[in-house]
Image 1 (cartoon, rainbow, N blue to C red):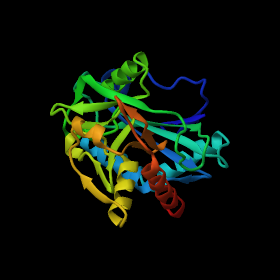
Image 2 (spheres, rainbow, N blue to C red):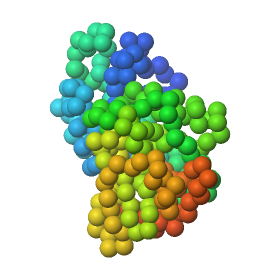
Image 3 (cartoon, one colour):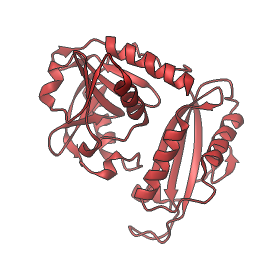
Length: 281
């Protein structure tokens, strides 16, 4: 069951038309978040990122799109799928309504809310190895649009195919300045001694919610020194740990890049801090 423009439909029902602008032009946005026992994790941050992204995309935000309205719509989908007592992944898609070619005829939007089950209520470190390499076929633009969760993710898709073909679990994306920006499915943090660094949004990395919450936690910490600064590929092999972060999986420690193998001690510690924050929030 899913919500399409306010109506609960079964998965067998057709919803999108061939004129959908998200399908035709990538004229859409999405938001992925976790719901645990009917509680939306970091909902305020997700909501305001979605609203800010819609403004950047010059979409008309419906008057009813309050935090309470969308929260109720999310929980309706959770209830329709009998997921009130289990962890779930929610994906919200927002797309401009059909009409026009590259230039839209309207700024009004439609939306869709879907859910799927998750195994764990809170974040856990994955047991699987994560070997990475640099993706050099295409580059991320160091601009504002690259920070959005848009439906135009061609570089990530091609990187995913390259990783699969070459037996890597993930790839690190570069911008046109040849700086490391992020991974296919999350932000990148580099750990060396007690210093933790992540690229700034101006480098073109995703404005991730987990990234934001982790930065907030690091800035309050007395154990680590946080730096928001560009990361050169040459720094990767000097790091003690490399971490990929996203709102669904939490922290994914990178185990190997070329000949360098990494530990995950700091990753485990940071994950405890975020899980504590999620429980309190």
